[in-house]
Image (cartoon, rainbow, N blue to C red; front, side, top):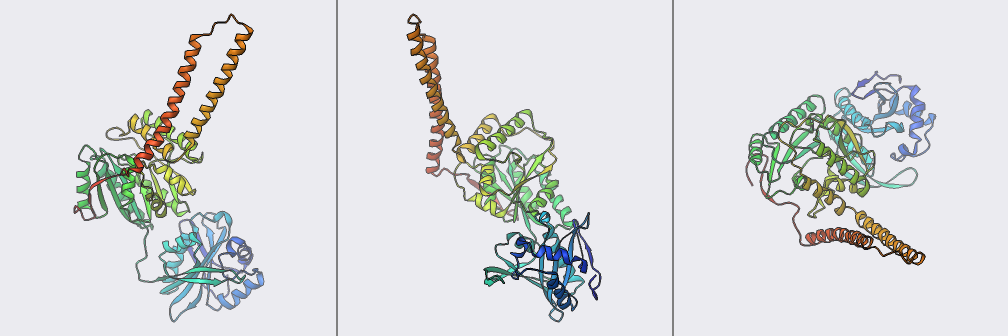
Length: 499
């Protein structure tokens, strides 16, 4: 342990912060000389043991710096460092800094957890009342972890010159003790159809789950946006009652049935959260496991989809989901190892980008895939449906598939071109075969059946291709006529009053 310093050990969920020791010099030197780490510092000269020892003698042992080592909890392997420098005991403030040195520790949420634990230590044991930091504006992952810990952007320091001559902009961020730390807000968007019985249970489960997360040290603000997709039962009356009883709930009533994806898009226009979670209204998607999705977001993903080991849908729905999966792979370029479902969490910027799509045929999976590649899966439990049956009919599933590959891919047209060329070549070769056959054996009669078969086959293929092209043209026509993506009849706001 560094001479004159009190031993420190702070235990979190996944990491442990301990006092830096002289024996950590090799770690610090190796980490600071990595290009990934060095590029995030103003000082970019080669770091040596002598430089670090001088840092200890002039900064740490004088009390101007408190530096801790970040260790993985299970193995106590050092993976990075966090420090408070330029500590002013009279003003009770200091500058905060952190770096993750081990490459395989990046993206696991260690930075966010470290920030939370270190801030608590600074305001508690160290007696500080204000923390400041500087971070390059393009270091988005670091900025997110600081904001999760409560830091706010005060200003932009323009063209800060680094030791190697490069000039980059930096955020100047602060956190003051006593101010309410900014919590991330979760917006739950639920499309509702024939769910007057199941919806109250889903809402209660979300409410209970968010309370449990708060008690476990992961508090969030939250809201629920319930979108009634013109359900024929009393679903909207149920939503109205729920909104009147709970200020976290917003209700939206669509003028006609637009479909699940359009209902989601309508809900996206009413969210105010940092993370948006979409789930079903029938209770089959486990709201009590939303923490897994949020953890995936915290580890660096932009979108996290729930993955089911054993789905409890009917054989028909499972078949439809399977076809949807294969269509997304072929037509939309979905990675083979990625599973997509109706239960997912997304960062706010992803939803903002999705909202820019105003055509009449939204397909949420396609919008996600064209927005970001940082998509991951977490495994959750899929439940049996307690009440009723799925609202998806064969016609609706077919319509959903058409939305997917006609709105976001031209591959069907290319496939049609390839089939047309193949049929043309086949017809040409068959014609040559017929001529040669006639020359070889003049007595061979020209077959009416084979002629009709060729005509029917070519005519059928032509109609299929024309129909496919017509589908694209028809959708273009509808879009040009500004057909609405959704129409809202009425809304109920947070305090239950109609607008």
